[in-house]
Length: 404
Image 1 (cartoon, rainbow, N blue to C red):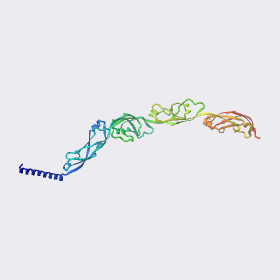
Image 2 (tube, rainbow, N blue to C red):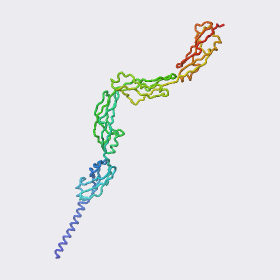
Image 3 (spheres, one colour):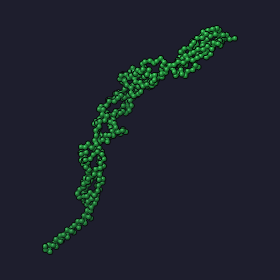
Image 4 (cartoon, rainbow, N blue to C red):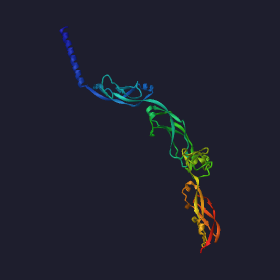
């Protein structure tokens, strides 16, 4: 190579080096490197893969991350959040809480320095379907003298569908009916709602249908006394001291035409002898056709105070007797007062056991009798519930004398 050509090549290389140095200077001083942070929405890929497994994303629904990029100022200022791609691949996961890695891509002229978070916690839940009964509930109050019958609802149940945890939180499918001042049967189409154990609305669960048809009969009410029906007879040595039915009246319900003429409700017949040892017995009622009890669970109890009859005999003499209407000019011969007799009384054992002879009143009525010998009858009287069965002997011969 000639010296002339060599010098020319050297100059060219030297010029290139100078150019590179100048370019580097310009780039470093005029277009320096810079970093920039972007807020980028994360794309969910392969969501269809979850759906094929019957899974749904409970949370998060939307997520964004912070991405830091670096590059020449002229390049960095050209890009926006839309130029940076952040995504998660949701294929291959199962039900539960899962951390899924985030992948980030940026335009070639910039470099991704960092991003956060690098993983996102997803909650995947199984999509389930359940048949749930419809519960009819009411608000307001009927007028006095009216009551609700048993509601009929069509359909009786509906299918609900959604994430397992949300469907599991559904305690009731409720149809709410306002009954304020209603006096006629209710026929209505009513919206339904899903509620949890505390009565709060459950969101995010789909219903097969949003309304149901409801029929609720409205009945009038009436209070009537309860009438006891017994069969059989107590043995001769027993008596009924008291009968108590609790409650003594009961409320019935029915259409107006069915309640007319019903003035009492009878108990089903019960053998009176079964009540001797059972003081408190729950009774069934004979409820007429097309009539019901307002409270079908109400218990009707009969309490019978049944006691065995007993007798008791007391010994007396005429000194114990109350002598009435004796002529003030006469006396009863003293020897006559020593004559004795027996009084036999009867009554319930509870009274007889407490009875003393002093509780009985035995009398001789001497009205109109003059001096001489007379045959007189003894008269006996006991307290309520005590019967004088016999007095033996029933009469006496007594001598009346003038006072000297």
